[in-house]
Amino acid sequence: MAKILIADDEPSVLEVVNRALALDEHVVVTARDGEQALMMVRTEHPDLVLIDLFMPRKEGLETIMQLRKTNPELKIIAMSGGNPTHGMSFLEMAKRLGAHRALAKPFTITDLRTTVADLLTEDA
Image 1 (cartoon, rainbow, N blue to C red):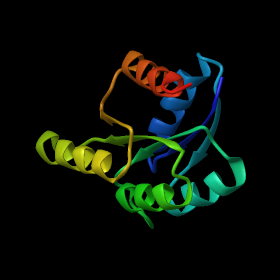
Image 2 (spheres, one colour):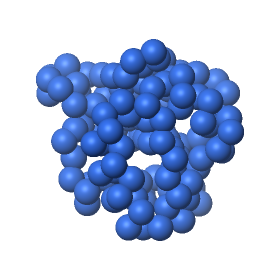
Image 3 (cartoon, rainbow, N blue to C red):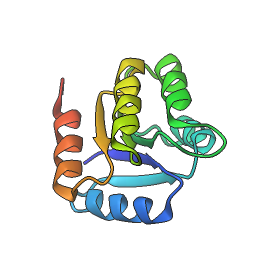
Image 4 (cartoon, one colour):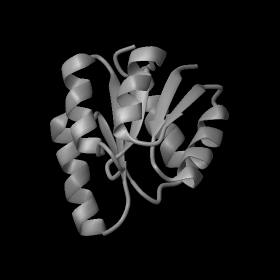
């Protein structure tokens, strides 16, 4: 069981991901943009952050860079949808900037749970 922060501006994504992670008994906290995510990391101290790349106020790439500076040990999974060609290049960029894994939306619940479990057990 881990504490996981989900940062996404789409309420339906927050709900589905929250429910999927609850199946593995994770404690989930949510943020609707990068600014709120940075605040939540400081107050909630999550073990892992799932972050959408396209959000209002502060986008995911910028948030990942800030998280890497302030919390270098924090595990991060980037998420993005939209155009598969552009979405993939942004996901690759997120990995270069410090995300440990990347999930292209839409992803399956199984892919999400497996990716989270693999990352949480890595170096454990």
